[in-house]
Amino acid sequence: MIKLFVLDLDGCLTTPFHSPDWEKITKIRELNQQSREDLSIPPVTICTGRPYPYAEAVAQWLDVRYPVIFESAGMYDWRENRFRTALNDDSDEELASINKLKQWIRSKILPLYPGAIPEFSKMMDAGVVSPNKHDIAEIREEIQNHINQHYPDLEMHYTDISVNTLIRGNNKRAGLNLLQEETGITLEEMAYIGDSGGDVVALQVVGRPFAPANAKQETKAVAEVLSEESTHAVLVAYRRLIEENRNHGSR
Image (cartoon, rainbow, N blue to C red):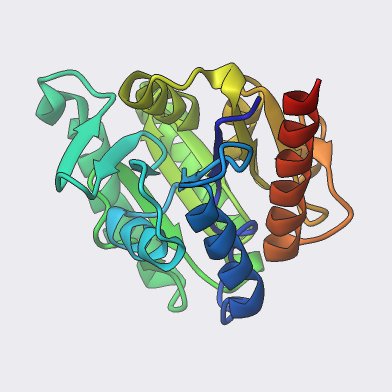
């Protein structure tokens, strides 16, 4: 049985730069609340590359009671107001490359792209966001060339509207490992839905991987592809998991 359904945000639960589909989000929230009484319904939580404040806010929308993953590999437990990361204790030294890259992006990249902004509240990740997909493609190429030359300890993930650079290995797979350690729920007992390249490492290790119709091809290659997009796909996957759990329990 699947005991936890982990949701990516941008491109899955939400559509970037669009108002949320509140009707479907409300249905997801109601199912999540019902999971407290019905063991065939897996509770939901979040694994996103976005910063902690956004992850916390969406967790409140959905009445999430499990820790959430932000910036790919940081964990926040809202019940105890507690953070945990996959970094070593000496994280300041590990983050030195990230902080230098942030300074370079601010001075060399952002002035060239007025519609692009840094993700200001990020702690472990150098993130840039823009609604202009053409600009993001150029920014991605420039940052990738820069880290190839100067920062072999970093890795990049991106979507159509964002570029995220993080410490190599401090990715969503590491985030799921934190969830496994914290909850006792194994990766095989988790489902995950993701749409971008940064989700691939998570999709490869869970028991039930899903991708919405709007996902990147590299993501679809490692997941069960749904015919629906974004929030609708999340709701369809959630209902499918519930049905499968109930069928499993009846055997």
